[in-house]
Image 1: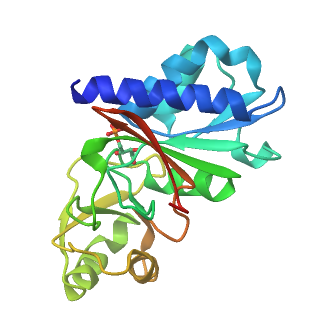
Image 2 (image 1 turned 135 degrees about the vertical axis):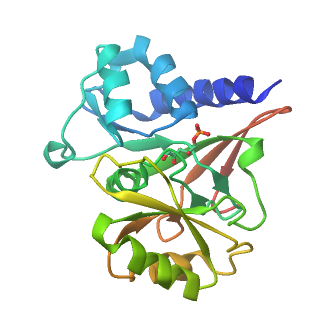
Length: 226
Ligand code: 5RP
């Protein structure tokens, strides 16, 4: 099985899981990226089984609407039953690195609201220690140089993601050379405390609740308690 096959398999497992958890009035949080796209496409035939969705990016919102799936404003959603999204890295504690697609801030907001956060990933994303994938940091444009200097002081090597403007009108610095991250929770807080940072791609303070991991031996379900 190649990586695309694994992503599709895990997306199908996520659809099955979603259908077992939702009710007619459920709102589903939808992530961003290629694995989330497979999930959207496979969820589409079941769109009458739930009330609608909230999306973590304009790209996912457009894809959902193209399938005739309602996309709600998060502010008007009473509750988000579960949030399904991919990751760039996951460790065994289900702490994640996200934001490879630049949608980290809205992803973190939807994850914060959701009752349950289900991460969907192929086995290439599984690591013992986070940080080989550079940590995306969303930054207010005028603070870019200031934030970059602070990141260097922390031992990182920030690289400006050229030509990328986030859905929120901000820029992204990808921070290399932080591997192995000893305490993802502590680093997440430290990065967030730099003035000018909107948020960062470490999802450790609010990790996933469940990981559906696509492997060549099948889709594994991993929970935090394991
Ligand atoms: C986007 C993300 C994605 O979830 C992450 O980049 C994984 O993407 P893919 O499913 O394409 O491998 O965080 O901001």
